[in-house]
Image (cartoon, one colour):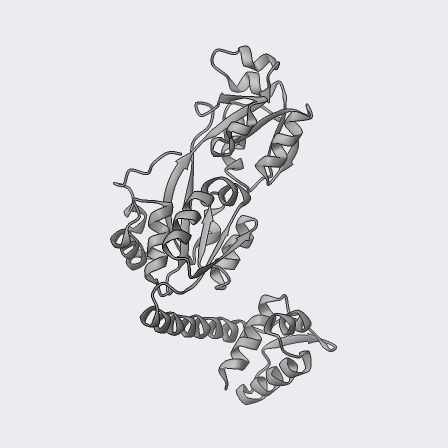
Length: 323
């Protein structure tokens, strides 16, 4: 059994059983991967993949366990490499971040600027996606950190820590009747067509929950994952925008921002990583730059308590800031 063979079965699985795509990703040939998979199956005495003709379609029951074990081994190898790099040059390396458009566009730029100033030789790689994609990217090691608000139940395999709370703002054209409201109500909002986030993105669930509790049916006429797209369609007159307050900028002076934090429960953005990740110094520093209350001791405590009874109380006495 060779480490390369384990990498092949992992990458083929990670590319939805497409050997050609796995070969491209690994800069090798499709026949070479197929041959090594067959050799590994022969050595183990069991099939790893279910085949449909010449194509792989899924994992066998044994294959599911073998690929999971292979992933664990590959992650441990990455940890060994990280340890060696840390002692060779603690300021040299790579850092992958998986997150949504809102975080990468409005929150992370200042953090990344500070990080680059301190660690100019660390290569940063930003991966944007849905919460499901973010979870997968962090779980399979493509990204070191996952930063997300929605669908935290997808992150059960990751150590997740709360970074900050945030709420929502309405954006409307300057001549909109809601500009005359002294204190906005959900009833007033529900009377207008709404432009907001796609379900599962950027705290959308809190918006839906608020209307449901008030027994109101919001008229959502357009959704997008990108706050800039939401603003564009508000400017076109398609509806009123409901978006994260962090996405409101000085350049939006042609629109009126109306505070809506009293209408919706706040959302919490968290950062996470695989528990078995070897945490290099610059990784601890990045977390603290993003969330100053998450110092090295707090991160180590979260790692130690992950999956243990009572770990949900780890941050209960911590004052989480609002943005």
